[in-house]
Image (cartoon, rainbow, N blue to C red; front, side, top):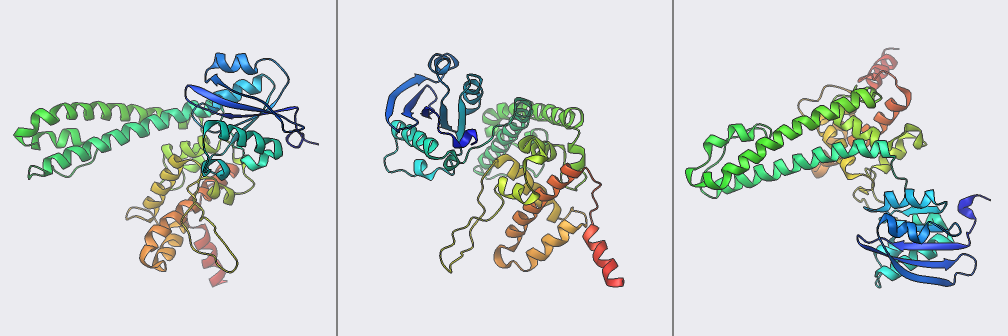
Length: 358
């Protein structure tokens, strides 16, 4: 019998808080509540409580502190289950939701069957450290966008408009067009934008270096038009291993690009995508899909397939086609990563042409 199917002598549910965490300890055999208490959400606090004693099955939801707590508790010999909060609806939609009840439900589910918690797998420290660079860049880009939109809106309120230009060059192109009465308010923001431009450029260099030197497997993914170092690196770091998934279709579900299902009897309504998994990677894949279907996207099987979907998709055809291309792109990138083969943009079209002429 595997470890996951063997009920341990102690089962612990922890509702992680930023400062303090609530825990409930159950007897693994009888289900009796042995302890209800709180502890500091610190390394010392968890070492003092779980550093000694018999191994236990410990469950908590994924969150800010879940990574380091998981590694710490596993080092003490405990079986650790990190639950997916999106899928444990018994907790997230409870009418009696509080820290103690959440910890109790986690313990009860962990005792009954860990699979009910939909355990997640944290990334390794190397991948997480590299991914932090990408996320920091993303925050810098978001800050720049917010500032540019704010400044354009403020100038419009005075009956003027700033010239059209890219966000990267805004601090240079728009500074001289600000109304005189707004110079005291906006001049410092232009300085902030200039600093952000330098920071984003430095992040871009770091991303390129990471993709080239530390994660050269991203090169196979960048064969696809619209997939640059940023998207390729995010894909590799988020998935970590191409062997983690049974097939490419699972990757589409992993990044939340498959439709939700709510079938009942003969009813099977069309629903939006699940939006599960990593939202940052999903955003990058959708951005690449926009490029593939956009005016600068080169002719390829993926573009032709997306255009056919768009043509028969009705009112929301373009939107659905972009999502579908993003999903198919995730499958393609997984295959290129797994096999390392040379990408042929018009492979299917050429096969069809040969079959027709044969």
